[in-house]
Length: 156
Image (cartoon, rainbow, N blue to C red; front, side):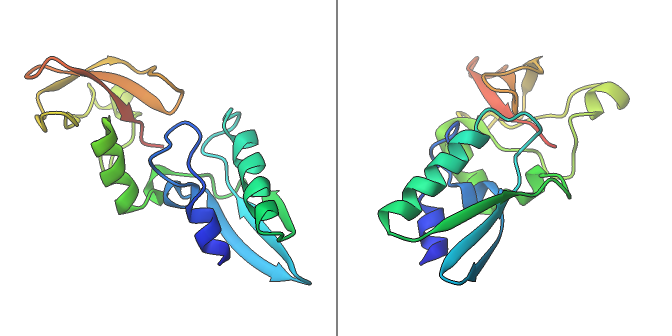
């Protein structure tokens, strides 16, 4: 039941994926009828972290289950923790999921941005417009084929 409660808590910035699909829930331990949940923020200073905590507490309170939340910072969260289901949902929502086996540092060290698939028309004929998108975890891209702008979930 604990996992099912958590699977129904949406990411506050991307409501089509849950905090479980996002990969921020690290562990759950139940002791003395208290649920101890460890979570890892997506990055240091993430403004959504307070919302994660509030939503977790409210969800468990509705079920009358006492909960304690602890932050775990090591290892740091990575986009590799996104579930495959989350990546599919991101694309359907209009956000290009992270390109596997890549890091956004490639822009600095490998001579250029990676090719990201457009979530609207599926073309890889896209270009980076800005490393800074609608939130800190996203970059802004545009498609050279359908001409639509779109967010790309940055690799961390």
